[in-house]
Amino acid sequence: MDKAAIFKAHPIYIYKMLKRFVFVLILPVLKGAIQYILYRRISGVILLESIALAAIIALSVWRLLSFKVVLVSDNLIIEDGVILRKRAVIPIENISSIAITSHFVIGVFGAVNVSVNTESGIYGRKDFSFKMYKRDAAVFEAMIYGSPSQVEIKFTPGKIALLSATASASLTGLIVGVPVINRIGRLLNVGVDRILSDITELSKSIKSYFPPIVNAITIVFIAVYGLSFLIALSRNMFFRTSTNSEKIEIKSGLYFKHKRIFKISAVKDVCIDQTPLMRAFKIFTMRVGIGGYGGENGEKSTIVPAMKKRKIKEIFSSLFPVLAEKPDYVYCKKDNLTRRRFLMLPNIYVLIILGVTALLIIFLPSFERLFLFAAIVSLCFVSYYGYISLINQKICGISIGKTVVAKGVSRFTVREMYTPADNIGLIKIMRTPVDIAKNTCRVTVQVRSESSDSVKVRFLPYDKIKEKINETYGINL
Image (cartoon, rainbow, N blue to C red; front, side):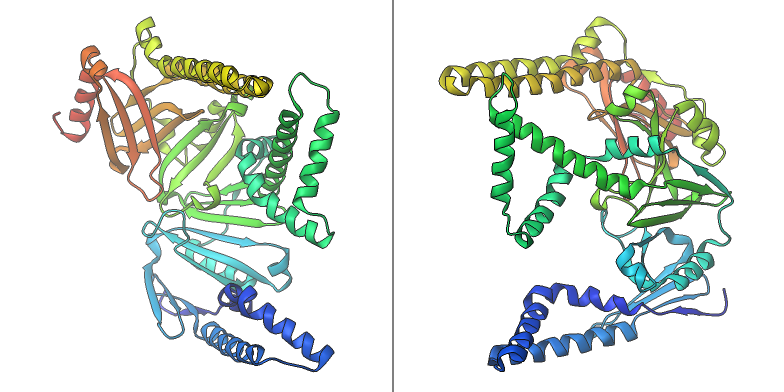
């Protein structure tokens, strides 16, 4: 690339600098202007604020005009700043991924948001983010990654819905929903307290053994989870993956349209996960670890939303050769003693729940039904934890060779992680007094990447792990 290609920011980029002053300056000045038009009076404070706002707008326009993205000699140059100018020079081969997002508001103006990530920087933050014209973003992408992908894989609405359901959480719905409900309530002159009061009245009409507060909590939980599901579904709608021999392109989104592009060579590891809901349907999801990508708002580089594990390996082993490897696993023992070790924590949690519930009922008998409800819910979670612990004993193992493969359970998710041995950044071996007595160990494998995917495998034979590490890395423990 000898001739320089220069791209300017879209004018909507001005908003990036102005948005922090919306409530401090912009709205007060607008309010003062309306008062002047209606009542013909203006205060000195509004005059000063207007001068400050005019100065900030001038600086924002200056920043817009001085911003540029340059592609020249296989380097990406980004220049930004007003008083303090910043200039970043990034070799194109060091770009790990590019994300192009859009939604209706900026789409009306023909703009998209472009994010450029490398393996450096802070995990969970975009390294560089700016607004570009949609047509310029298409040229920018083509100049970095070449021709479009050729093979496209689409997924059924049911599989996309399943991915959205597993990615949803009541906390997400609560964080998003409460501010929205509060603002809508102000417009309609209905407060959040009134909404909660209506929910309480509805809960009283539901006949059950448990008190109305339990019904109210259940209604709120279902409502915020449903909201979270709808948000995730809108983001994952029309999910499709396009590939060729060099790059992968992922598109999704209904309102927020999201496109992620990255080279296959930028992939550090491949994870095949199975969440509790997916376990009920005997399917898996696959994502990859890319330096600098993901983490923000829980974003992950998902390539397959839902599919049988055998099918995943058949389709993608040509792109990711690590999936075609024949692992030589070191497994934990399958005897009753090892099973009891896996079930130790669930059993302890059961005893704690029963003991705390009994004490609360003795000292606060008026809330007996509420405490019983909380205990039943907690015991359900612990029961599933015990079940998943038995699954962990059945599958957990590690293969250390040219390719490192680790199988285990991360929280409630069953995970298989595949990565070349050279991409391993950390193998941590921990031994408790019981492990020393039983000649076992716990192994944590972590990828050498900004995303740092990891898997913990428990109660493995210590001698075999030492042997495998010595054979692969030449380290004698």
